[in-house]
Length: 63
Ligand SMILES: [Zn+2]
Image (cartoon, rainbow, N blue to C red; front, side):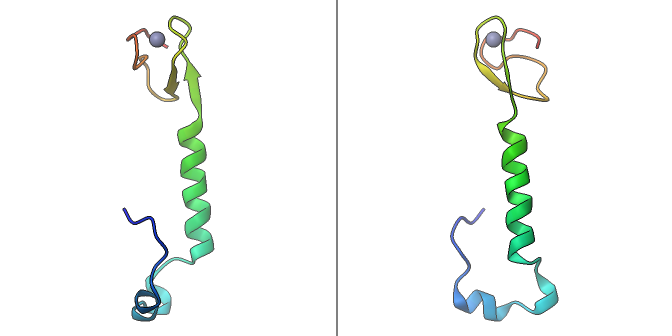
């Protein structure tokens, strides 16, 4: 996965309908990051585990 902005050459190489608008891309990326930040705190050890995971990644307790 690339982190940097596309270079001028890459922008020129793409056709108009070939890629999603940068704004939409950023919005989707932000949504993904927000989802990933939703955390459940384990009631046994207090460590943070991503929501959707049923077991604590630290102590293995069911959440
Ligand atoms: Zn735990």
